[in-house]
Length: 121
Image 1 (cartoon, rainbow, N blue to C red):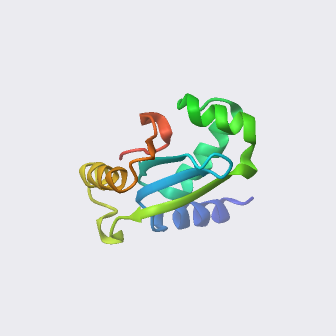
Image 2 (cartoon, rainbow, N blue to C red):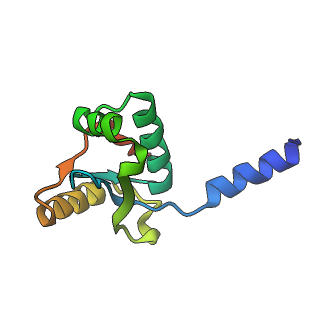
């Protein structure tokens, strides 16, 4: 790949809008739901899948379900989104509050451990 194409791809990546909010992972076989706050949902899902497939995920229950059931048993999605205009601000507090609200609405859900893939800038 030539240098100009790499620069173009890098610029497009940096300028894309992020999808910050609360994401869920649900095991269809057991109905268990896991929630996490993330600053970039697509990137977080990629990271989660990689870590789970590699056996490196820190949440032991989710990792055990993944190992038993396989990727096909899971659904990934965004439960609540933050306003895109807030995406460039320091949104750590807003994400924590949103996650707390979602956990209150879904008391059966489990909060994923800190290393779930949400990265703060």
